[in-house]
Image (tube, rainbow, N blue to C red):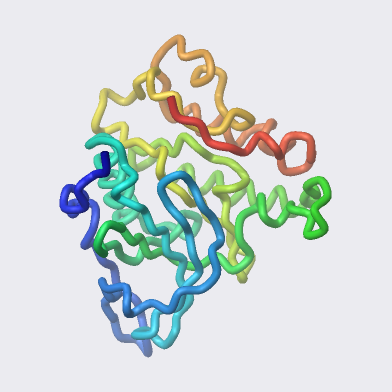
Length: 249
């Protein structure tokens, strides 16, 4: 049974400002303001597309379009609300910038900044269909340094990402790396500072032992594990890359 789109209205309607010629401009909350481009990602409930905002001089953006009718229960809507609320309050050069979100018929549109170079996982992909190619050591150091700064910022705001991985590390045209995809994120301010062990989310190759074992509640240290030695190996050792699919139990 599909979720009533009206139930997701609380997850939409947020907007931030863009700057043009030194003046602040509001991001539009209507689909007609965006010229859609190629699909750059997809999941069970959503697709991610490149786009341009015609009302802001064709500024490039990335839009995550979530099919609300495919959601199974109110918990999924609550996760969406938490995700958009979290993104709308983030402001750091190493965290993907949120522009706005709105509901269109049975879809929730989340408009974010565009990362021209794509994800680290995409950069490692062989265009000829061969095995993934490792990143260079200096690039790994630069990317992980940016991720550390982004995660530090999230943690100072009492948020745990829970799914740091190559597919969620985005690289921009200026060489800046940002953390994206907050679908698994959780605010520790809503609990007592630790996450319910039954919320088994993340990506196996990048997942902390305490999350895998489900023997106790875990906290921000799970993110620290995800940017430690094993992720560095994942970016440099092609054998680690196929383990890139998120799981949720």
